[in-house]
Length: 167
Image (cartoon, rainbow, N blue to C red; front, side, top):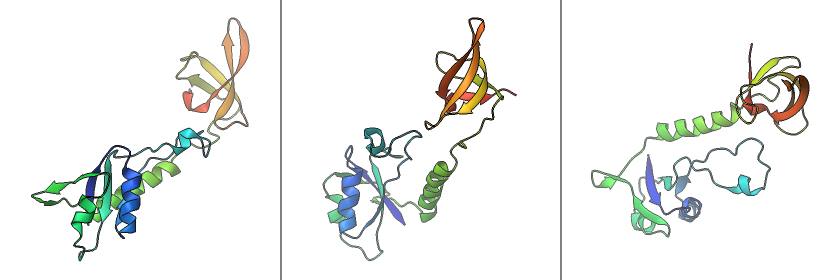
């Protein structure tokens, strides 16, 4: 069974590392980095906590050093239920892990448009303009489309995430 700690802001990693030294299993779920994030960039290093300020932890049934967890630096409190540490079933945490893993696997396919396909732009300065897909660009997630503006066709480079097929 898992329990939950309420921790100080931005202390999820610190508390998890400290409890790992005490041989306590910890889990602070994070969302995956958004697409087009360069590895090692500031945006990549930023934590995207699913439950900011909370850390799941699992201990052996024979564990008796609750005070070391309660008074660890960065811990505000142990969530309780009926004056005892609250319990989260293993299935709940495993389901959460599975959903977060599926999110990474369920990203949009890299090449979801084909040349000549009619598309509509959903956001940005060209929102709601119909266009024709031309090609995928070497830059991650960028595509080239053909729009008809001011009486002539123009080639425009946009993020593929703002396009949707129109038919």
